[in-house]
Image (cartoon, rainbow, N blue to C red):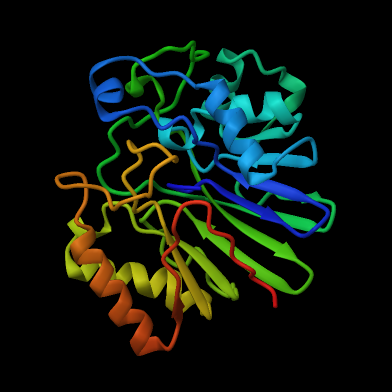
Length: 273
């Protein structure tokens, strides 16, 4: 559903990665103040068929394009908000009760029905425009800089024998995923096209060669200032260089015989056939 907002379901249990539906314009974001649009959130949840059966919202980090609507989603569904202490401050500012929030730690394993989620702490992509931790509750509307990144996470999602790794930020910790093998990799590519080829090759080694997926779905490549009522398009220059990332990714997948699926908004993937 754009950026790194992804719903996982197995027919019984549901979890959401991030929660960003309001997608305020570039003008509002960069020059004004932003807040969650709860009516837009409700419409998007209805469109995605997300209701009270949603068990948890896992927030990858606390920038607005990941966390802005996460508390509203939790309010409307009763789901747990799971993320860093910075994410908790966004939840507190939205009036979410403490017992509906869980602070994530590296290596934590959480189970929701048949879905098992392992949390991996990571680092943000280059060019963090609001680095640091959020130390006070965020009351909205606020400047986008109030949504500091805090701790970053990746998520291993398992259901039965099937493994999916969601890696939202295009950066890596050496050997972080040593020994981990997955069938599908949701690969964060934001700002990857702006990095030197040597960095992209090392990123591929640490994420793709390490985990050996048979399918890659790139995420965080779209222009998140565009509403979800329109087709998503690649992020514009100078924020990114999709025209560099796209052919590089296609060539790497072709050479490695990995299926590449570039998602459109509201697309559903059947990960297990």
